[in-house]
Amino acid sequence: MGVQAPLIDLTEEDSKESSQSSSTTSASSTQEDQNRSPELVTGDQESRVVEEVVEYQDGKDFGIGELVWGKIKGFFWWPAIIVSYRVMSKRLAISGMRWVQWFGDGKFSEVSADKLVGLMAFRQHFNHSTFNKLVSYR
Image (tube, rainbow, N blue to C red):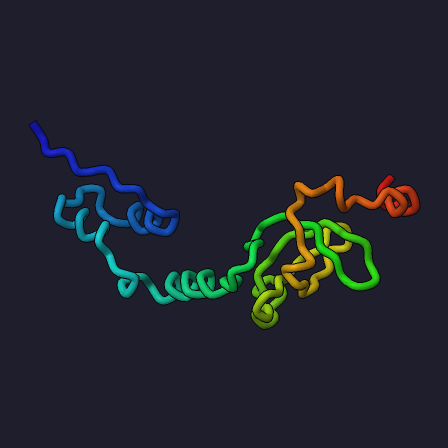
């Protein structure tokens, strides 16, 4: 009868490391992997983790990848996606603001989180007159 090693829930980066290591790990090394501290993460991985934690941690809603309706002065509500400042190689957004990429033209804007609503609020923010005027909708 062989001893069965405990199952480990691996993150994507951990699984890359595991696939490169020996397939015969002892139970003690498996335990070490589970209890690994952040200091043992490679420099590149650590910087990504730190940046993700810092960006958009101001208590406002809407994180990276969320689909939203956004409103800026002079324009109707428009659909967008929340993006990281790294997408455009710009600075971090000011606290309470979000970088968005607008659907249609692909442009970027820094928008107050107060001027963003979840995409599920479609009926409240869809503008029929704009839809009927713009050829790009057809």
